[in-house]
Length: 329
Image 1 (cartoon, rainbow, N blue to C red):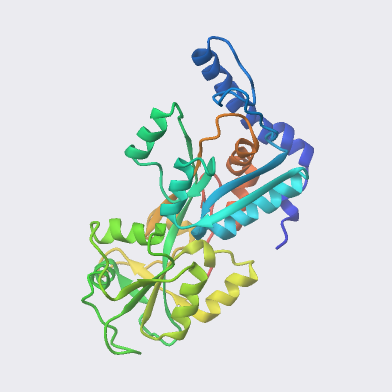
Image 2 (tube, rainbow, N blue to C red):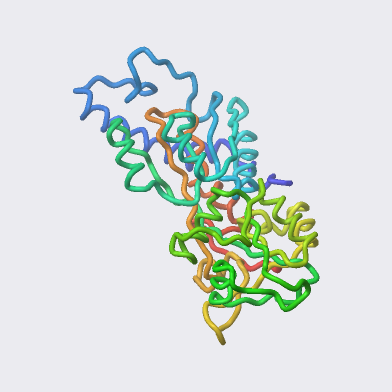
C-alpha cells in the first residue's frame, strides 16, 4: 500500500504537530510528578519503581502494544507510516480478542492498547488503586458490518429482523432453508460483545451462533455457506484502495440496514457512520498506562495528530477529527 502522501515533511511534522502534542503530555506528567513526589522528577521514570531504566523515547526504541484484531488494517497502516518517519522506532503489536486485550493492559503486559470501548468502572478502580490514571483517547468511530453469501438475495435487513436473528427465531427464505447460522470472529471479541450488549440485553447467544478465530475466517465461511450471516469489524472491508478489501468484497455481500420498518437502509460508509444513519456503530479508543514519556506516548500522539487521523480516513473508517467521504461496497 502506498502511503507516500503521509511521508513528506517529516521534520515539519515532528516539530509542529507531533512534538507539540508530546510536549503537552510531558507538561502534564511533569506537573503530576511534582505534586506527588514533592519536586523529585525524572522525565523517563516518573511513576515507575526506583531504579527502573527506560531506553525508549517518543520517537526511538522498541515497544509492544495491544490491539483488537477488528482494527488490524488501520493499526498496521499507522505503524507503517510511523516507523517510516522514525527509523529508530519499532512497534510490535499483539492482536487479540477484546477480553484478552484488556486483561493484558491490567496485567501490565502492554501499556498501550487500541480497543472498542473505554475502561469499565471496575477497571478504572483497579488502576486507581495502583496510582495509575490511564489516558483514554477516542481516535475513530467504526461499525459492525453484517455479511451474507453472494447467492443470498436478502441484503436489506431491519433492526427488528436482526434482533430476531439473535433470538434464534429467524430463518432465510432463500437460498438455504432453515435457521440462519451466525458466525463471529471470536467468542469474546468486541464484535460479539457489542451485539450481545446492543441487541440482546446481555443475554447468551442462541445455538445458531458460533465463533471462529478471525475476521477473515468469517468472510471465508460466509462465502462458502449460503445460509450464513457473518459479523465483522468494518475496517476489514472499508479501504477501497486495498487489494485485500477488493478480494473480500468479491466473496460476500455487505448488508444494508434500516433502523425501522419502512425507513431507508444504509451500509457502513464513513459518512453514514458520522450521521448516525447506520445503526451499528462504536467508538475506537487508544488507552495508555505508560507512566513515562516513551514510545507508546509518541505513537499515541502520532495517531491523534492530523497525519494519524488522515491515515484512519484513508483506511475507510471515521476519524475523530477529519472530514469523511462515501465509498461504494
